[in-house]
Image (cartoon, rainbow, N blue to C red; front, side, top):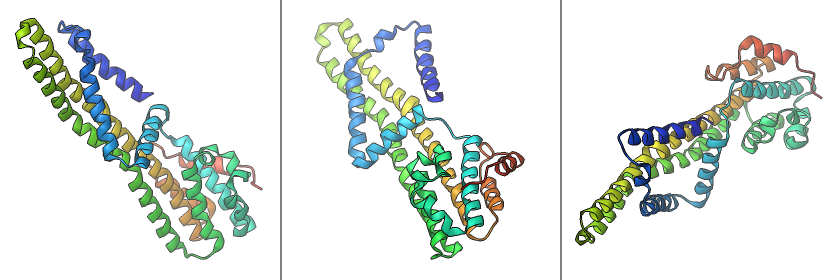
Length: 287
């Protein structure tokens, strides 16, 4: 929603200032300039990106537009899930966790928390982290290193769309100049048609430069930055999981392991300690 509001502000401010200065918005509407700039920009995107990155970009942009930022309630749900899992392991033995992590879709615990259950990456990260704990084939320090390596790999992969969007954003002003030069070429061919015709074509050429800069700094680069913020939020979610599971694997009590994870969060999304503890203690015993 904030992205849509921001886009409206950008467009309204630009057109409003232009109209206050006596300009007519329709003067800026030159289809040929839009075709050149947006078409070349799309071509740069395709050339610069492997197929899987293109799909990732579409997903990330859609997530920016339609998704909502995670808040303390989301992290409370995550910590409640982890606490329930740890309590099962503490009360019934680690082997009791096997049925939950091997088939999480059928797990009575995971079904309570769609925030994780319906997100394949988060669900896989939790299950992959818990499997070595259940198997007992890995030392706690080794487990933390393994999860850290996986987290770093996911973070690098998540940054690919950011780099491509930034490349397109940085290229658009130059593409606008290309469109302007093409417009000037057309203008030179129309000199014999008189000053009025020349003036129209020069205006169209300048519109190309304007559009390239406008789309780059008004939309594409800010969108890349928003994707970067979303990536950081996703990474923090996974890091919270890692901190909790690593603490539990080292022998910390479930409540303590969850508290360690809570304290690793940014203040903007960190649940209050007392409120979280009350919520955890109020949970019905999982089966």
